[in-house]
Length: 154
Image (cartoon, rainbow, N blue to C red; front, side, top):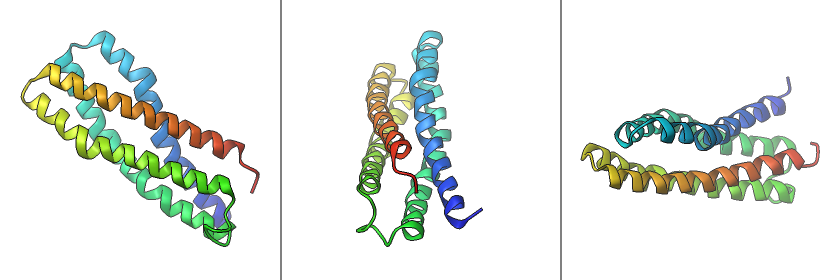
């Protein structure tokens, strides 16, 4: 295995974990939780899901730029000479990071407070905002995957 192949595999795994986790949460877990759980249990479930999933998102947040820069140096002469699709992918990563940080820093503490206070309507409102941000992030992530899949062969 070449150095590039190893770095590329790590990069791909980090992206799959992040985007795939959002897809699972949005398309499978959320509808199942809404249909089977009352608000207190549903909000508690989501807090636990976020606690566990966000550890892996943080790993992806760190691995993606490190492996991305590694691929830039292994394949191209740096950012300026990288193809436009690479530059677009880097910009979209920053959008995904900003959306994730908004959830992590602003929304999640509000959800924690609402659940601790057993304020289920407020918790549901915050969870709805998180759901919309995750939906936006999922769309950006799927766009990134599409760009990566359609890119010219290295």
